[in-house]
Figure 1 (cartoon, one colour):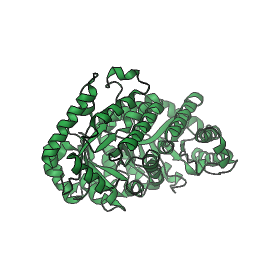
Figure 2: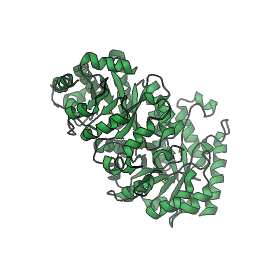
Figure 3: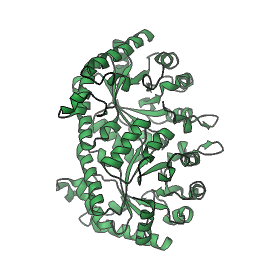
Figure 4: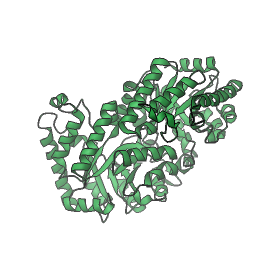
Length: 269
Length: 269
């Protein structure tokens, strides 16, 4: 997918919502456990209930991998279902990968070619030759962890390096990598006040913002400090949407929660 | 596996060799491609040819994932084969995972329970609550990236934080995490001279050292600067062993290369 196509979807839908698919068999409605593939049945129902309200889906690969081969098959079915039925949605494999060059190339091929995701989240610690292999694929994107929404972000990401926090060093360095126009960045909504400075470093890049909802981040603050001329934001919500109810009305409840967020977004952009 | 059992294996075999299984269908002998599962056929042959010379195997999950469900099944078969036939070998899922708390827990369960690996490699960038979920499993280990063997390590890992390089900050901080006795650390052999200072920070921890062989690191330097009283090293070699030949003699060639390394190790410890 091209960036302009993604921005067009945001404009049309008045939404920059990304629905996170963190699918946990212990949390989904019990009646789905009788399905042949409960993980995919749940994914599909959530997608059907929310697709007109969001512009992106983000399956978290950990939750699929936790179920081994069965989980991996459910991930394949989910991305294939999205690509077939909702090709205008931006798809994110939330995998947080990163390895030395030839191994990163393997990961990139797995997610971009084998599974045909539009993007994959990656970790910065191993530097340039772990990131650049992900940037070699046309119309595919790598979303680099910069400042994450969890408490542990303060262990290293906010430590001072060359008179600035490490996450800013990551943004500055990565924005010089080859094909860095194919980079987006993860910035947690729980640290929205940091978005102002982040926008000075990467004014034109898309930011993937987790942490609104269950983790407590404010949508309004994210927009105030993080929006650029093309919006440039994908705000993710996972648990507060997909587990809005764990009864037979789960899909309606997920839709209601997604609609609530979409309406807030429409007012803010 | 317990640490004392691993140290005992090292003592018995006079080897601290870890064989990395980075299995690439474009590099394995072409006659294996006729097998029903060429990836597993190759893994199994390498294991059979080298098991008495090494104490650990490290499948790199990227190479398996690159082949989708088929690859994931080959990974399952490989770890099951090891656990059944060679339970004294320490097994490492080289996955470089790391995510917020509940997601890290998913990854930990996937690798420690579902697949029954002894250990998994993880990335430090997201901090404490991304690492500690991996440390809750008895006799299981998380191997944290500290100083990696690639060129990109100089982008962030060696940058100065609080008057020391970031990788030392990672070592100091992580060694204070709960259950940090279940942590090991990745330190690249291409930066063996750094091992002296690293040993002052984590004198008792096992270090997983990639980069000997194809990447150019020196085994002798690694031992000089990195060995502790219990050896405390696992030196990994992947490509130089498993792709020593790509003809029908590949297993013999892999054995010859592993034997060469084991002999050097026997002399050094």
